[in-house]
Length: 100
Length: 170
Image 1 (cartoon, rainbow over the protein chains, first blue to last red):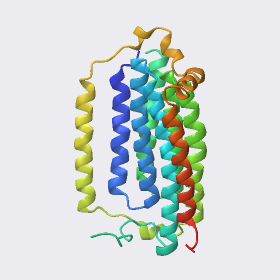
Image 2: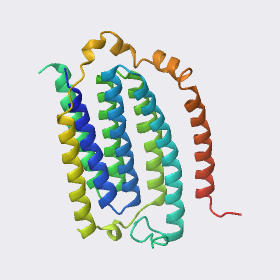
Image 3: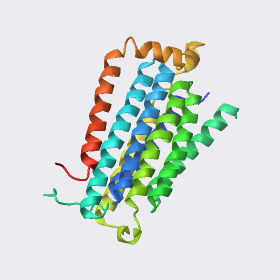
Image 4: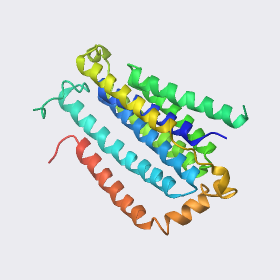
């Protein structure tokens, strides 16, 4: 039997890898992929607690996280397309028009 | 080692390893394909947690629909010259890495001290909780309002995506 903490450690590791990707990469698409990675690692935490506690609420929450991720991906990719059309780049360092 | 723990460690290694590849590849297409592999490993982990419905949804919706959207956008952008995006080591990156490792150590410290809950205590219920039947029954009774609000969210996302990606606002 695999203990709960093993699942939590896998998900924590994936979350931190995702956050490193968000903080260090400058390609907007890869930053987006890293955000998906972080959302999925949180899903894994929700699922493992749901299974170990015998409560379906965690699985429901993971289900809604997936829906929000789908909406977020659609809108975010539309923003990237609009930015690319205007600036001809997806480098986040060059998209600094709203930077103070 | 039982077959269950071997599967768990293989899938976990696959998930963490492919996550590393996602953030380290230069080519976005390769990164997206590694993310799909990561989603399959996660679906396997969900199955080991007796969550059949979410495991299937993970593959159909995430690996199927969302990642195809990503790959389509990468294809449409046609990022020819990757040279302009060559990323060196900057102070910001170093600080980000150090802070992330601090978070990782904290999380490991907390989770290793977590007293484990046994799902053996649940008996047969553990396998019944993630079935389509049980999820559906809960979704249309206890979670009906969030489910309906989700439809509004998706409508807003569709409209927003079309407006944002339209060639000109007239």
